[in-house]
Image (cartoon, rainbow, N blue to C red):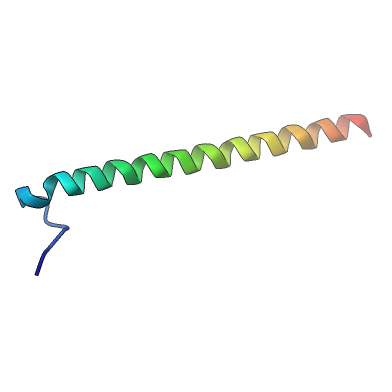
Length: 52
């Protein structure tokens, strides 16, 4: 059977490296988007408290 998790196999090494890099990039972008949404929510909450 074809084993994708074998990092020593040269046939799947580039696939594993590419998938790892894409997974890491996706995780960073998701965290960045969530952080920006939380930051904006906090700013809006502070702004609405200043008006009242």
